[in-house]
Length: 222
Picture (cartoon, rainbow, N blue to C red):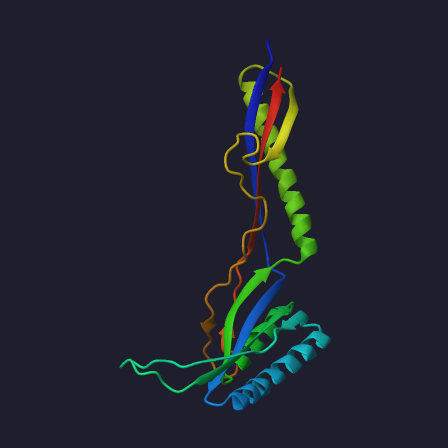
């Protein structure tokens, strides 16, 4: 029986619980005098930096960063088209990678109540080591799916042996737009206010990370 070329696609995905949470918060202040605004932003941001440094020492935070204070000014307009006196603004952003999600919940709750502090968001991630190992395992499983699929196709037309010719990321064999084989963005469910005076005000329930891979493979069947 003559040789037949079989081209197939293999896909696989798995779900992994997030291991880290990257929280971003910003401190913003405005006022009529530049000096007072700068002093105010320093007074508000310093305790946050000290708190994050202490949490890192305790092990709840893997790393954290703080941007330089940005200061600018402009003259706003009111709804009647009149330009108002000069207003000075200052802001600073802090980012922290939490490994303890309970500590994150308490921290977000406490800082959200502070004047001038805004929680910009939380992103859920795997550690680099887990992400690398998971991606490799998912990619290997996708290749096995392609082999099984090609073997089934070959058997259906009376061929018993398949030999791999090419294996590539999705799109590279068929020349379509290539798809990625990397984890999807971790998502955070909407923070819910918890009932009860003794517990934290915010509860975080991160969704699992979906790690997926897709490959294309070409086989010779005999």
